[in-house]
Length: 98
Image (cartoon, rainbow, N blue to C red; front, side, top):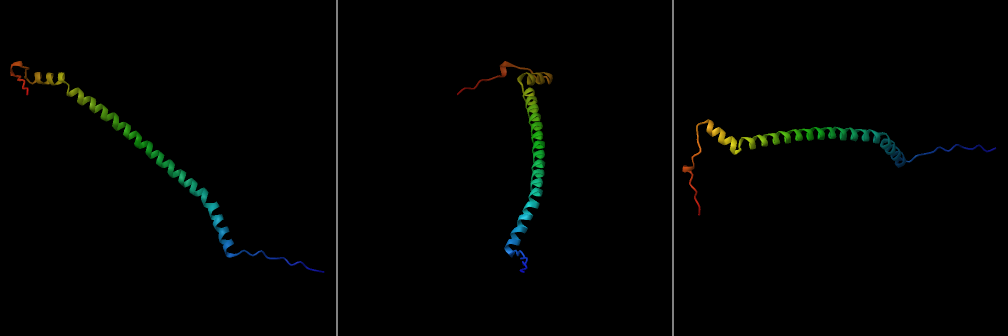
């Protein structure tokens, strides 16, 4: 009667190292994916906030530009000059040509 000996399955060091690396990759890749998506979401929120600030600043700039154009109009300057006692006199205007 022969007794079958059970053979022990031996792993070499390189095989063990490869298995450990594969297990680590499988375990840590979902964590890395979630972390990167969270970071991307945070950056998208920051971008949207900055876009809103830029839009607000552009509307303020446009409003101020309109106000400058209104205040520098010829009619407004003439009205302010008349209120301060200045008058338009054609005799004081001299045309210089080349």
